[in-house]
Length: 124
Image (cartoon, rainbow, N blue to C red; front, side):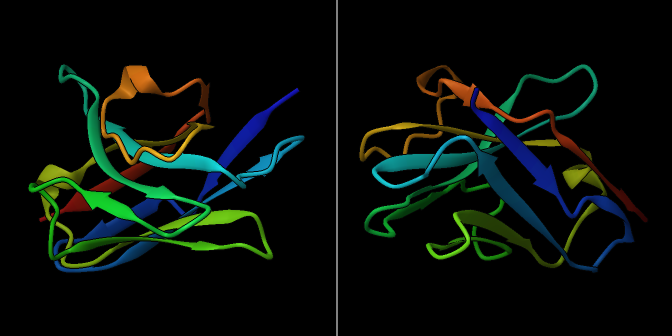
């Protein structure tokens, strides 16, 4: 059974940083693309960043470009989302998702496996 687990969420003041991690059990990210999504109350799920685990190609949403970075650690089978200069509007539940292939899509319906999410709260 594939399980994706996010960690690293929490509460931070505006301007602060957090690093989210996404690990998988029963699954390897090799030859997968892994994405980060977020959903705030009353809003649609938004693609934030994605990475092709095999080659490192990334895609980052314009809304977070220059502040968020997606990276990976092959040895740990882990994908990270480094979030800097956080703003109150970044407050949301953040999810990681994965699927096989080489795309770095930010469309949520392109992903098969999902984690349970981790809360990020940014206060002003």
